[in-house]
Amino acid sequence: MTTITTHEAKTHLSRYLAEVEKGHEFIIARGKSAVAMLTPVPKPTPTPRPKVGEVLGPVIEVPDEAFAPLSDEELKEWGL
Image 1: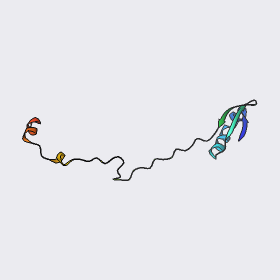
Image 2: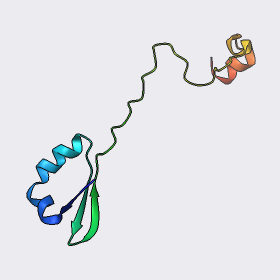
Image 3: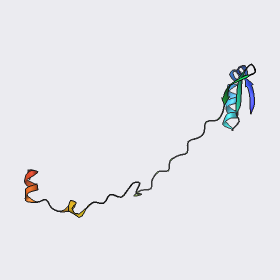
Image 4: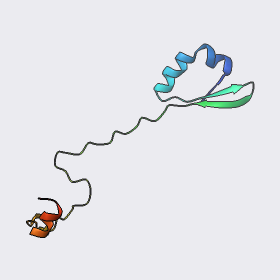
């Protein structure tokens, strides 16, 4: 890891950023004291998209009663 001064960092920031993109790291010092670290930002790992028809969660079980015809009483309640 290379140590650079704040003056160098301000003067040649573009050059140092190009080096950081390649994976290098720099310590920025004010005088003899280190005050900051210039490091690459980790690239996010893309989340894979699900395939068409792929089940992502728990399977929902629908009981057979859900498809049974409504009784006369239930039809009256619905106004049908």
